Image 1 (cartoon, rainbow, N blue to C red):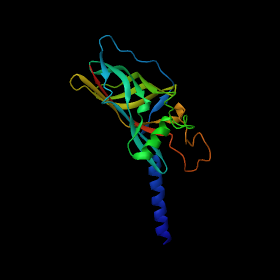
Image 2: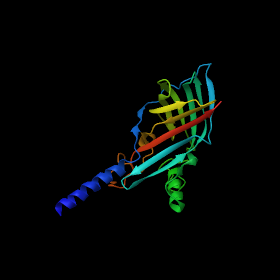
Image 3: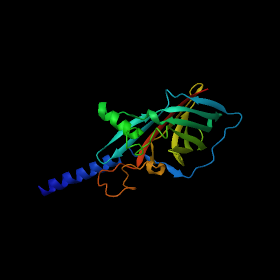
Length: 221
């Protein structure tokens, strides 16, 4: 009986650990703001299609996780000879959407993330004060389909340079760039709600600092 109890305890511990870590991809290397890249005069500029482009997110805590999307408001990518040289996009923070809940629970989570709940405006993204976030490309390493993207990510008026792997292709007159799953530490952009690295005595009522992201950019000439 003791062996059986021990076995279930081990399984429970492993399960809890997996759930707590769910949503964490490879953490992006994060540094100080860098100089923005500029395209050559020969480069072709592609306009981001905001209907097709999306950022997918996953946030986790010990009891589970949530996932959703956020849309882009605008953006461009510049490339020469199928090599990305420069680019930027603006994120519409009012478009934060949860995909794993329905009804009132979905509405409540989205309102909390956006900061549209009275008294909880600053818990997460406070879209009234900070309606957009931005990304400006600073460097691209690698040639061909597999690249490393570096850029300045600004959220809530805080800017850090992040680095993540991506794949890029040029179907017809278009460009498609998709990051591999990566994570950022939200507290570096002052998104501190429920962070055990910021607040003490949270017990198991914390939310992971790492948020997993996948960026998909579709652009056309």
